[in-house]
Length: 334
Image (cartoon, rainbow, N blue to C red; front, side, top):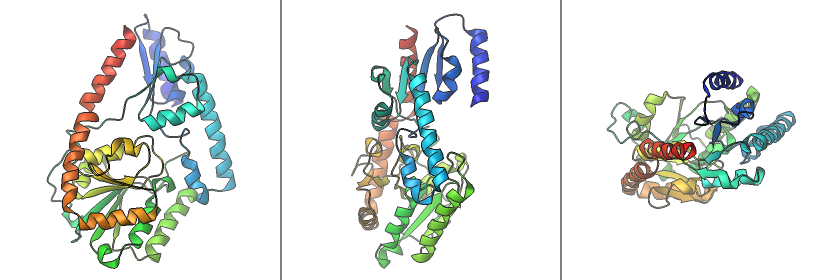
């Protein structure tokens, strides 16, 4: 990020000749060196949930005391930087209402220049399609579920495993879960043992509840393969406790797949319960009940998937979101 910031600064220094220049960054700390450029219209898209939404609270059982101190210190540094940089921005964009709400609790005085523009998805790339090559993933299951995300406690994979373990035996035989994502937590360069502890805990749950025939870990998948995986399953399960938006939600929905998730913001800003998916209270009990319902009502998933695709096309396609950005830039330049 410092390297990008220094290169961007040189470009601006060499090319800025009028107030008709917009500097738009998705990492606000890249903008420290630009605070003295009075002619610039600075636009910031804040798409992260951290440090505004407390992800780290869900990591505590797997963190050392030193890692906790480091995490809390990093939060204070980032919030201090944000207060300094956001004040200079013309517009601060958030990807969800909930993210903006949590941000404004930490950084006050800029509400009048905040707007919400959600994340977007390429609906030509992520689209419904017939998939035969990955059919072996199903292994005869009536319902094939997909989890996409890092092996990080706040993503809730351990809760999903426990919910699967609680299923009646007859239901468990009819379900398969595919897990896509890297082993690492992918955050703050935490020591290896941090995510190893969580991965070990997941392995322990699989052994304890004998889930080896129910779940299959695929690992990290290249982007061009993701539409194939989305189209191979019946439903995305997203038991996350913390999100700023949830890009995997609209990727799956764009492929015509419904979502099973917890009824928390901002997920409930995207998924319409009973229409494009199923939202439940964040607990193993309600997640288990939803899984039972899904197995008993497989046919409804196609109906929900069609609704999900329509919602993405009308709200989250790049065609729509890019036009919103163009209108924003024109307004700033005028």
